[in-house]
Amino acid sequence: MDKRTTEREAVQEIRDGMTIGIGGWGSRRKPMSIVREILRSSVKDLTVVTYGGPDVGLLCNAGKIKRLVYGFVSLDSIPLEPHFRKARQAGAIAAAELDEGMLQWGLLAASHKLPFLPTRAGLGSDVLEINPNIKLVRSPYDDGEMLVAMPALELDIAFIHMNRGDVRGNGQYLGPDPYFDELYCRAAKRRFMSVEKILTTAEMANQGPLQSRIINRTMIDGVIEAPGGAHFTECPPDYGRDEAFQKAYAATAKDEDAWLDFKKTYLDLENEAEYQRAVRNA
Amino acid sequence: MSDATRGEICAVAAAEAFRGNGEILASCFGIAPAIGARLAKATFEPDLLMTDGVCTVVDEPNPVSGPGHDQIVEAWLPFRTIFDHLWNGNRHVIMAASQIDRFGNQNFACIGEHAKPKAQLLGMRGAPGNTISHRTSYWVPNQTRKVFVDTVDVVSGVGYDRASRLDEATARGHDLHRVISNLAVYDFETPDHSMRLRSLHPGVTIDVVVENTAFELVIEDDIPETRLPTAEELQLIREKIDPEGLLRREVSN
Image (cartoon, rainbow over all chains, first blue to last red; front, side):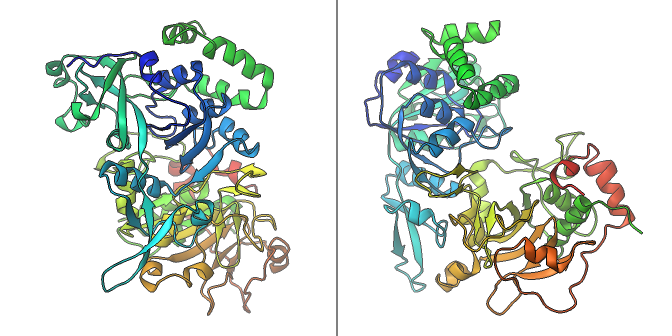
């Protein structure tokens, strides 16, 4: 089956109030071309589950997020995402802040179709105050230990970005870290994967070791070819982070005129091709 | 007479925090702890395991400013295995603390109400799981009453009073070791695990420490001085670990 599609078609599946998961980590291999398409859409009131980076800052700024489920929101070289900081300090989003490991556990529970997974992470901390929906469970064994029952983080739609893929939805990462991308896919009802380059299945074998082939086609409903799609986050070995661009983006959090200028130049555009052209011309 | 800077004394105190740890993963927030861990590994704790800050375990850690030479990769430790590693307990992390109280409850999530904070900070990150699973120390580059507080606004890292209310099995991994500030070194080696002044950095008085602490510290008689770096340690810091002098930006003299 040929699963090729576009950012626009994928984003048209999002309904107001849905829960979406966004792969990658911080400012690393984020499906940014899809995030930019969400910014162009009229969708609102999203619950976003992610190890957050500029995807979160941009979606916060556009008023798309109602509730954020996260452990941190960072640009890596800039430890705190400044647009996310602004949204939090304005009380603009409901913040379901978790321990980073609890987030993994919630995605793993959803991907296994379990109601929850037990963990000690969170016990004694204010994570449980901030998230009153999270309950405890007693071990049924002799130890009888009270543990956090991290609830499954079920997603309506997951978006991930890979280095390579084929039209059937097999995906391959070529960088140093797979992050949690398979978990988002298995936790979601619908799954879209953007890739730097679509190859034939046979060609993918020449790109990297067997262990790089972490996404198989049962995990994916749509494949989007998006060269530069993770910009300005890093997507090694195809490209590193565009630090100059990221720095300029971060600076707009403190300067309304600069933000309007950034928005006009890079976001108020018809499509991803225009964005990539604007970046090349910058 | 040593010409060591305050920052270098803090880095050596961070190295001392890892003494005796053996073969565990050493992780750090901040420049002085990152220097300290490298220093410990280069001298008295050669078996420490350290990552490049991303996902590879490297035999000879890079300078704190970033990769500076060809590294020999010992192992692969991507983010999704980090929690396997740390919940297993085989780690000592030195984390930052924007606020810390007398029982070692730590906050770097936000200042003010969590629903609408006055200042959003890093977030919970891994602090709840870290503090319940393995040894944790803290680094405070600028100790004031706004950092050493009576009550933290949000508990991200779990302190001893809260840990004592958990099941014994839950709390067995809880182990707050040291708090290192620009003024002194602290521990929790008291009957109720409240914070104790362990050593004063050279030139710092007890009065200065008390002025910059909003809670009651345990202060015993005859507080020793934090040890000075050796000539070898100074050479390692200045020539190999921090040739760019990033430490000077974190701790003023």
